[in-house]
Image (cartoon, rainbow, N blue to C red; front, side, top):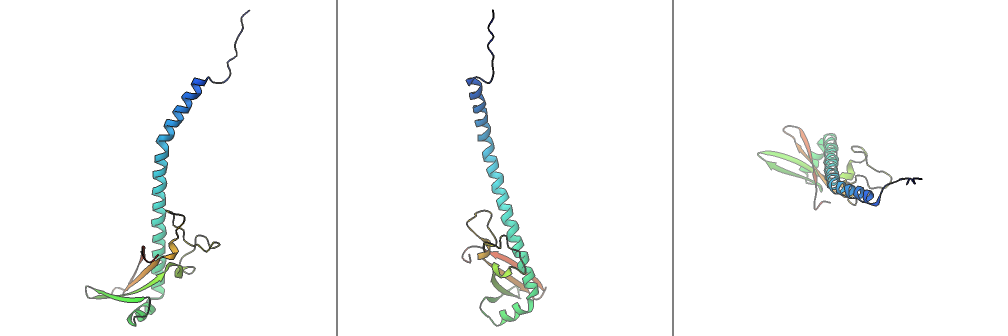
Length: 150
């Protein structure tokens, strides 16, 4: 009489081999995922800043005359600068001044409107943006200011 041993499952050596292969794959894949995640966050940040600047340009176009008049009077938050014989009129505003008329908040419930995708503890809406008008070309530009204004 021949006794047959029923072989169900895997041996310990086979399981250890699979674990080693999975560990090698994980060490290769995790850095790649982190790099792509960082790149996506940077791209999202750049997109949000561009949207804020576009909203500020719309604000500048809607308030064109007011910005020029107040900058000529040197009121607080307004200034002018001359470059290459062209006088630029500037208004420095908070990003929150653009909400809700020019920019839609990310999360209106929390009061934290524009989250920084690179760091979830920071918000882009606390920074200043500079709206600059060139009356010669009637061009309005805007630049998001990082650093001390935040």
